[in-house]
Length: 93
Length: 93
Image (cartoon, one colour):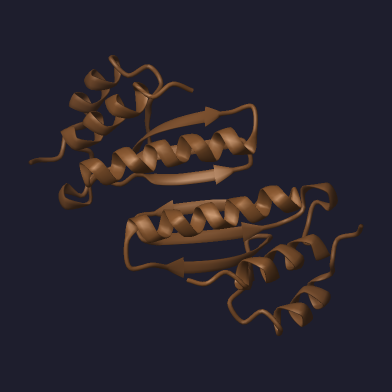
């Protein structure tokens, strides 16, 4: 596995309109109608992360959730991040 | 309810050795033996937060959890934060 170049990341991100490249992560920002729904979604993300053995950084502030993906092993962004982003995007909000 | 002064915060923090005042929050940093245990603890904190209707900022990165408390209504730290910190400290790790 290798880290993706900025050009490769930006190209892939065209297929992921919910995500942006920022602070050396690919990041999605979500808002929910309640704290409970936010934590429920966080748990769904955590379940997928555990299944794929690839773990995001999760930042929760009341009804806001920021998901940041990067790949420690390559010290950058890899296909594993886009694979996890795709799985997260399949979850219903 | 009023915001506590730095002196009041530092005085109260003597009773809360797990917490420190930082970045305009009172903050506790935790490490766990697995991602699953980290998320389980996050959920226990979320349950207490919902019960008390006072919500922390939660930052999870694999087996690390940072809990940051502040009180939006007073734009600072209040007794509500120390009340929540005390309840969180009663949870078993």
